[in-house]
Length: 278
Image (tube, rainbow, N blue to C red; front, side):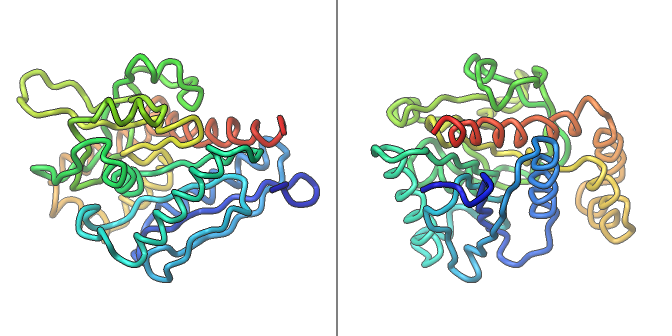
């Protein structure tokens, strides 16, 4: 498939939020718009409501971003929307494994990452003992340092995490078989006898995903958390200290802002190279 006229890149966003209010979709749209302006590259965006409307994109797009979402990544197995979703994943894999060019890159965020890992049996997808909510350090593995999508990141770098589930105990044989590698893991806590979660995987040459939210916009999220209704929800659930700490860390330019400015923009740059080369 060729891009549309004027070298416009077509981007599909798969919305897995099931109609629930969220900041994720706004952040993804903003990153795409900013990247388009910064690179003088016209883009055309279409959104697909996967869970409510059973919508998935065709192969007529150049780049795909699959969002986070609410609920359990375990309990929807076999649902009609999941059947369609993994049908799309398989078609994309088939395209990339075949002789057609240009290849199509996809990014899987949080819930999408967990679904992908469950479907391909890349690790143990399970419930956490407690919700992970806040700003946390992420530690890069050796392959993370060589990953172009991670170019410019510190080690550790910081992420916004908001999840009740996790991917642990990675199946290295399956990951290697797909042509993938583990890029990053959760903060090392030697005093806590718990398996650390896998936070980012290069699934294949064209697929990559993170268990955290690389799209989290620091300023927007800080403002969001300072709204009285949201502030109350966080304090009731996690305490005032957690709320204060999160707002402070969101406004630290070396933390979430840095991650926001690098991961998805780098992904878009690398994915668009594929189109220029072919």
